[in-house]
Image 1 (cartoon, helix red, strand yellow):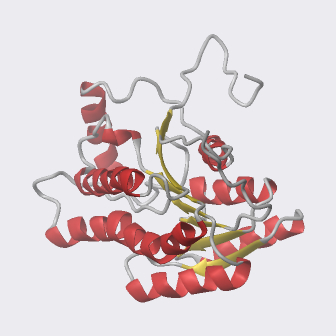
Image 2 (cartoon, rainbow, N blue to C red; image 1 turned 180 degrees about the horizontal axis):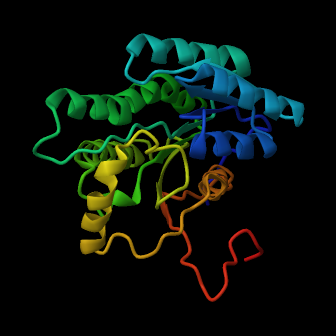
Length: 265
């Protein structure tokens, strides 16, 4: 039978897009599970505040500024992370920027910016941390994509194109890294209550929601909590050696006769 090296007791983790939403929740959940965590995002002050809260709760956390559209920022962040917590064992690639726009009329520069942040920046960070994982024969790469991969939503052409590319990249990594000890996983969240979309034009949303409903993409109005997705990510990272969750989709539960969200399963 194959033999698998046990996880080390200390598995430092990096979480991108960690200033709010799924990223912030993931950093908190991983820290509570014993992972030293480094939070990365453009809003460094928010990351530092969350890292401080984690440390006050007994966890180990640091923060670094990360702009996935800036190659220099990505390199600096990787160096800061390793200096703060040591060799990275877990990378949660969660950062993303979502701008509304249809496939024909989205300006080329806006379309390219979505691909830069959601795909190319993520790939660059992976290239900086995965080599060490391969050398140590252990590690977890977790890519947060979207349920829009399977159920595309009109009006999000650039974002979904980039996330399609990111998931394609992750699936190739699963093949290329098989047997190295480095696991690559994909998490597809459904609609999630977070700050993403706060800068959308309210006047554009009503016709867009009507368009989604026309295609059966808005069956109910419940949203996932960021902590729901974070728990899924923590479960993936915590799987024992010899097992590998390759892909999970998480959807909000529709309301029943009475709202049981927040209660026991």
